[in-house]
Length: 494
Image (cartoon, rainbow, N blue to C red):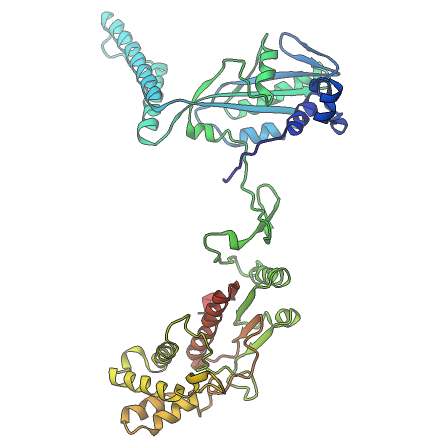
């Protein structure tokens, strides 16, 4: 869970002890090491209580009383909620968990001795029964249970990659008077009993127990119990994982701790993601919140594919460009499907890349299995013809699908005319939205492709042209060291 360990300063440690020894005076803590040395004072003067006295089963700390408990009996299955419930109890308390790992060879040797001891007890019991002519007696439940538990422990060590741990759990709590202290002790013991565990009072050992539970790194009592790593793990008081990245944006509230989830996708191994949920649960709203946060707090480029016309107002308010692709509006937005800027193809030969794109376009129009090799050669030849002048210096206007159609019609091969005929609907026909020069600002930092009016006949071509434009924008930004966020709303439509 990415928990971290940090070294605390002298003042941090003294503050912890001061807040425990002097409950109710937390705001009065003051300590200056240089001043203390100069005056010849003892550092304990700033944290010590007015008085402290240890009794049989409790201790007196100034005007308060306290008691230290230890976890004596563990349940066969420990719930990870027990520590949380103990810490949620509304009293000033401190809980410590001492864990001593045991070497694997020592652990296996110890468990083998226990197994042999249990088997010897069972053998002696059976011999006594045989001497009494009781040859059908069943092994007592407690011996059978011990045999089962020791074998299971050995399986954990040998087969399930577990380790043996010696664990000591101590807890001390404070109250205003002895009556309240007894009530709190009973309540804490009840929490343990509800989880199958038993907390006991350390009698005549309150001083050693207090030194053990305080953050001094001491272990003055011997009440350890043997656990596997799996059982020890549930004693860790981390109830949930928090995500609060520097430079991140708000994604919601942690369902367990109710803290904000602030995540920076740039820190992740893979920053991709899906927003899922039932209809009406706010998926698009969550995406709009993320887009707004990115637009206002970063200089990253944002590209949105909007099939249901939901993002237009937001993009305009953020100063972006909305590209409405529609075959029914002759004066609407146009994107040149053959647009080719310098740097197209991420360092690869741009003419080859554009030729492959046009062949993919024809596969959408005619079907992948209906284009013959000779027709692919004709397409490649025509692409070279129409781009020859433009590729010299990338000056002027790039060719369009209309130029490709005209070049195919000039050729004498009947296959060329067949290819041109397949393209006619999208060049001189009614669906010629991609055969004009681009008339929109495709360099805007925030782009929204509104494809709600993209009909069924134009959808396959439109999506191919749109994705080619997005792909090359991402490549160009990567070369410039800029992040690009691409959002596709209602992705199931594609």
